[in-house]
Image 1 (cartoon, one colour):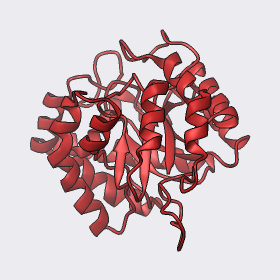
Image 2: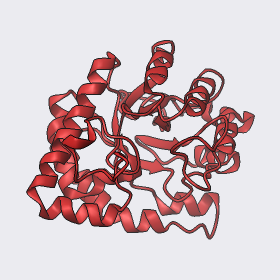
Image 3: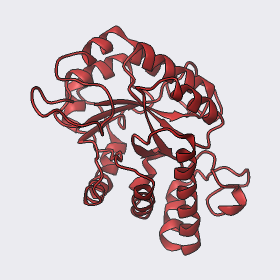
Image 4: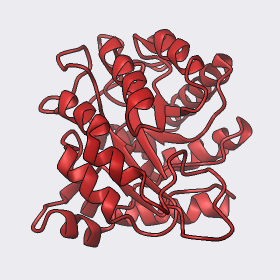
Length: 284
């Protein structure tokens, strides 16, 4: 199974947390924002951490493009950052060929920028799960496969596990994403990609506390599982999400109860694309 940190490269506070949580805690993977302000620092840290599975965190919303803004004018705002109006932009992507061309160019540029780091491409996912959009999904699969993508996050979060950990927990994002996630799962697997059987982090995004993470680790379903998190040594950095409990998520990744739960028999930390064992207890 994978315990992943998203937004690797967005800020030094995130990069520091990734290194600390991997060295001393349960973090086994990280997803790199190649155009993030601290991307170079993230890559340098990743090179010092040979067991950290690093992948591409594809960004098309609410952050910085890899291409110059004038090359993707319909994707960015007046400040040269990606737009924040996901629904409207999604409609324009579906209806306007010019926007789709810019989209494909930016996706190509991000895969190329990742390749230039020299890091193995352990997985691919997308900021705000924007690859659930069918047009974006098609572009990611086609371009990603040319760049060696083998493993793609599909955010399918089992409600029964959440209810067992925290009865009565609400999951509006997971519920609304469900049909698109199932469609993406079918398309990815037809393309020969490995996807997780279960992904946790949607319902409690930005609030993956030690109690919740330990609860998930004690109730892992069989198969390939990913728990994704947003750790940082502190919040308040440029690009930080309002209300996210970054430091609490770092605490969870270092918590003794979470470390003990991740060391149980049958649990093997790594990447969700790692080879599955042939015998014995199923790896989570």
